[in-house]
Image 1 (cartoon, rainbow, N blue to C red):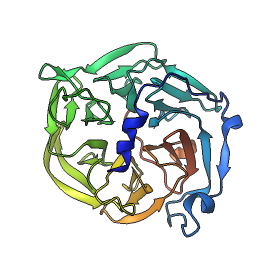
Image 2 (cartoon, rainbow, N blue to C red; image 1 turned 60 degrees about the horizontal axis):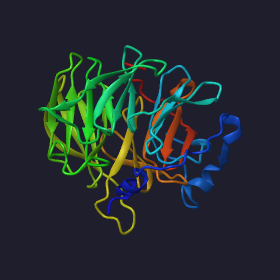
Image 3 (tube, one colour; image 1 turned 90 degrees about the horizontal axis):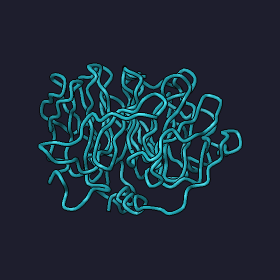
Image 4 (tube, rainbow, N blue to C red; image 1 turned 120 degrees about the horizontal axis):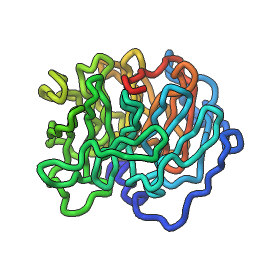
Length: 325
């Protein structure tokens, strides 16, 4: 069973609210890179991490959707808690929005709004203070989405997003697990419907490729972007390294750096591939990561949401900033 099918347990409603420290400095636990990566692991040459892997927050329920606004603030979701959190540049943590529609993936629009995949069935845009909400995509062909999972915003203002089955009603409202595109004028189109549980999604730096991470196969996919919301045939970009005894397990969320390297959350840790699809190495964490993003000074800090915690690590290469950041 793929590792992140375990999310189904964490996505169940919880009665208790997670206890969270309000101050970054009080909750930080530093882990030596050698210890956190394993005795036989080393930082990836030319990539990192550099120095220590830091536990920024813990005692959460199931963290996801990290994104930086490029101003020193980091946002992430806690799906079962039905919250979006914000850590400001001073390290203070606060609730950005509650309830969040069980938000998962996040990314900023050029307007400054925060686009969010609500697993309750919609893709929305939240105001900069999180007080107001507008719907970007409510459904397709007159039916709500299954449970939107992850998204990426292009320079046209459109949003590509995945809609697998995790936390969705049964039978599936859409009857398919798919990838969609909502244009800046609100038109929704279904682009891909033949992948098992499409999960993570991101664009290449030139926006000529759309990478899609299925959660129930080892093969990660890439599709040529021929226009806004228009894709050519897909091809296998890379094959994830597998955990022992878990052949065929896939990935979760992902991000990209300025050289086009992909950082894919998986059962083994964060697997890093170059643009040719070659594995550069694996960054192991104390908990299984669900998603990753770059932020911090110079956009050279990699943040990972991993089950009940948020981790950070300094890297040698900056992350790529999408248009909304």
